[in-house]
Length: 515
Image 1 (cartoon, rainbow, N blue to C red):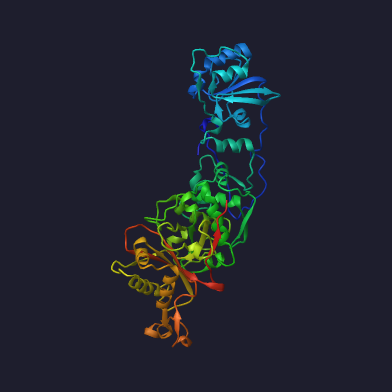
Image 2 (cartoon, rainbow, N blue to C red):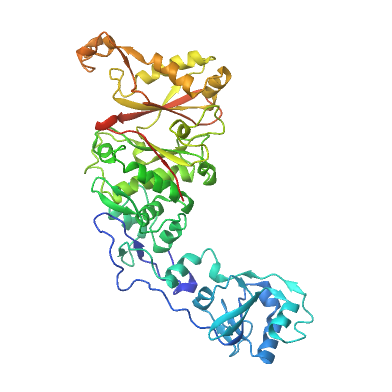
């Protein structure tokens, strides 16, 4: 990242980014960190803030010279020390400190200044207002009566983050890490072990501050105690990892809620890391926030291409890795792992579903935004292009679900079924609701114990011999979660198999998303 010209030497590389690894805990700011700057006083009397790159400012240049002569006007020029002309009444706001500290949003802005502080102001060009404000008649007789102003450089979206860092003083407590002048920022993050194997965005202070604008919570608020190292994780630390994952600020509340859910006793993130199974936290988003942040619940819903879908789950995984210390080869002991361990996040298509949403089925209202975390593998497809009745499709789905993790095991592992719109249409046409579907498929998933016990079918894996002669449900009560999502074409649904459930494993957890 190169510093903008207005911040200093255009060839100088910014070499500071916020560090968030659990090995280097948050601490006091280093002695060379930015500190709040005192607001520089404005010149006394009449003052106008302008920039050459503003047609209205250029239009009023003759009036500015006239007022400098007749009323002792001082001009503060943001972008050109010789605009409107080389003169001792023109001050160059080279670092934009005057404009930033005195809240200049529009140029031209005319101020009345007393004691270095603006007591009154007007913006843009309006002949009558300027004459009343200055007490000088006959201003710009050959100019139009009115023209709107332009945006001040101090509120330029490409500059505001760096200006805030420079002049506000840092509210961040993460340790700063300097990298060598010739070191590549992106490579340095990978070299220090802070990535998941894919490139991550360098979390500069400006980027982290911008990310924090996505929440009303204080950066110091403790979000969770993150396993496996049981490290306190603040909102600031979540924001750092959200930057690295590529999130936008409006995704931050979703990431925070996901971290809260993951770090509960019920979800047991430590156990999920330590298992040799290829599972990770799958994040399902419900409620209004899905559309507010532009999530994709349609075509390729479980794949790439949507920024929110792709980065929210990744941010959660980076928090677990960088703050909690959960890294492959350490506590993370997955035999094979899966692409889902990079981060799997998607929203439910609530608008296209005839059923209540997953969140509603778990006790939340339709107007609440939520995340549900499920301990899952990568999705696998179920193809049924022939069933035209709800009964036929349900029998086929039940048969596919019997092989969840292993067709010889039952009651131990939960599962999630992602019903596509074309498959869901069978249930809409039949008038089935969620409750009817779960009742029907649960009956079909009652399996004779004789088929599941060890040795049955010549397979040594299975349930204890005492289970013979007893019908066994494939899933515990509530152990099958059903979500509606996907593109409108394709007679396919997906199954996401889960990890060990209950007290020795993980229970799905739903949390409300708050600002």
